[in-house]
Image 1 (cartoon, rainbow, N blue to C red):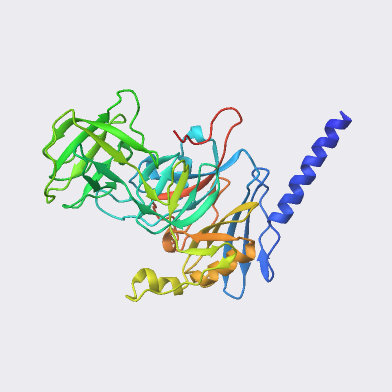
Image 2: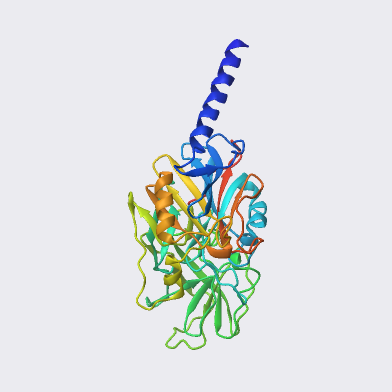
Length: 399
């Protein structure tokens, strides 16, 4: 009994020491009373800086906490759709484990049939939900190491004769485009006009799962002359825009190759969300630079708005949200101010996510941030921290 008591005391002391380190206030900041640690290696704090004023919410994750992991998630569990962050978290796949914390993710399409489609890359549980568009993405490789890089799509279809065409993924199809749809987009392709090829596995038993870096051999099961083709878990649909020319003549039984390639390669990546721009790279703060066109996306970088970001160093991950547009609480930050704050927290690398009314942070069962619109906005996706139950769940598949 004495040895058990000593062991328990040591664990409690270690947990208390971690908590005190995790919530130590930055210079000049007033820190709210800390919440009890939800899990060893995980903490949340909210501190306020009068000079802004700023209210900053920080979740810190010890990267050595083996049962805790980062997961990309999409509203309703599909590649389109919108939900409040609190609903998105409570609706996570229960097989992943218990949700502990989350922050809003990527920019997204806001209307029409593809409302909620991410503006760029998303990988959920090792499966491509959305293709990259060349912008910055946060991703975890097959070894769980974090990256924030520009990612370019090289997704393409190769016809039986050897010619290839680039393809989009689970997005609104333009008249001159080719888009691949999986059942993650819903019950149908939501398209109008154009030919659509219903594809099944050419091997018969291998599922057509969209793992980044893989090439799928798919056989044409059916050719439909109109859009809005039904989707099933064992099929894909390749939608050909009605304005495309010089397409090959295909018949049922023809075999096509679907290459899920990107630059850099995301082979084996388990989790990814696009966002950006990068705030800190390899210890160097990245100064925001306006574009020549003076676009809205460019000008807002230099304005104070609510902000969300993910950062890390060799020991920890940080989910950070800065409240904004509330003059008596927090006015928000420019991207340069956010980069400076992430550096103060100890991040050697960091990248931003969607901000403004979408910025939100959830921890321990509720929204901890103060939404700028007075209520949660519906969003497309999120980056969550979950606790895997020992022996009940393997990490995301890379097959």
